[in-house]
Image (cartoon, rainbow over all chains, first blue to last red; front, side):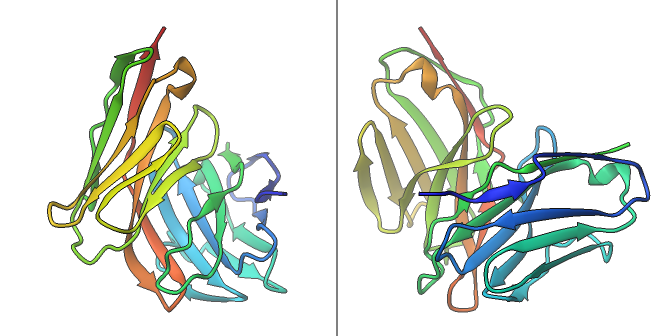
Amino acid sequence: GAGVSQSPSNKVTEKGKDVELRCDPISGHTALYWYRQSLGQGLEFLIYFQGNSAPDKSGLPSDRFSAERTGGSVSTLTIQRTQQEDSAVYLCASSLSLSGGTGPQYFGPGTRLLVL
Amino acid sequence: QKEVEQNSGPLSVPEGAIASLNCTYSDRGSQSFFWYRQYSGKSPELIMFIYSNGDKEDGRFTAQLNKASQYVSLLIRDSQPSDSATYLCAVNIENIGEYGNKLVFGAGTILRVKS
C-alpha cells in the first residue's frame, strides 16, 4: 500500500521567502507528526496532529512556523520569512491512533529545504 | 540533559557477525520503544518496536528491553553489508492526549558491516 508522501522532495528558496511543505499520510492514520533533521543531527519534533487539531505545537521553533491539517488527512507546514538556519530535511510521519500512544510512526521521504 | 543516549559509533562488524546496538533513556515512565534504520540521504525506516520487558524477535533482528535498567538494545544476526546504516533509537517520552506519542530520538549509531 501507499506510504507517507511528501512534496516537494527538494526546495531551494531565497532568504525571506515563504515556503509550504506538504504531507499526505498513510490512509487511515489519524495521527500526523512533523520533524526536522539538520545535517548530521538527530530528529527534532515540531508538531503533532490528531485529526485536524494540534494538541502539541511545542516544537515549533518560532512564530514563523505554522502548520495546518484539513479533512484529517493532508497537512501543510508553512515557514514564513525563511532564514538560512531553516535549511534542513523536514520529515512527516503518521501513525494509527492507538490508546496510550503506542502506534509506531512511519516516515515519509522528507523535503530537503535549502535557504540561500 | 539528553533523554535518549546512543553511542555514535561507528560500530564495525564483519559480515555474518552479530551487531549489538544499545540505547539508554532517562524517563522511567516511557512505555514504547522503537528502532529505526536510516540510510544516508534517506528517511528513517521502522525496524522494530517493543513495549514489554524481554526480547522480541523479527527475522534477523531482536529487540531487547529492560525497563528497570532503562535500556533497549537491537541485535542484528548474520549482519550483511546492506545493514550498514545509522540506527536510531526512539523512546516515547510523553503521551500527547490519549493517542499521541511524543518520541525523542537518539542521535543514532553508525553501523558498518565489512564484507
